[in-house]
Length: 157
Ligand SMILES: Nc1cncn1[C@@H]1O[C@H](COP(=O)(O)O)[C@@H](O)[C@H]1O
Image (cartoon, rainbow, N blue to C red; front, side):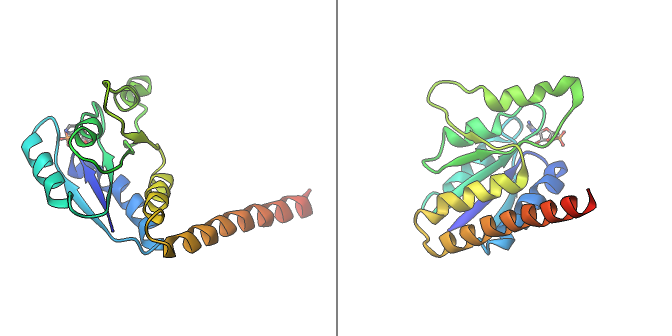
């Protein structure tokens, strides 16, 4: 199994690292790659070919005009999760290039890096049973965080 974190520019690396951090918590192997669908599309195709025989989930990161997620999805049988970097410029309109896709093109969109990684782990857990226990543990930790917050807020009230 492998998660391919594919980013459009090295400038997306900080966002990619947040995804990688969560994958590390689940001990899911990942690789980070850079290729722009606008500027070097043949390289994107080469990268896809490299992983086609593996159990791969792609997480694509492209800012501004996101062609990468749709382009990747249209050229692989593997699931693609689009996780574009945050941008408030121009009223946040960049996001629409991730949300609107042509017919027959279906990358999923998850905006937060931690949750994009979690979704990839869940997809892989369909085949890799050991990940199920890790997901349950993760959920339990989240519940405990809320219980702790409730205790703290209540005692301070
Ligand atoms: N959409 C796109 C196509 N090629 C690069 N990008 C994205 O545009 C932003 C700026 O890229 P660059 O560093 O190449 O100017 C980055 O978020 C990158 O993913």
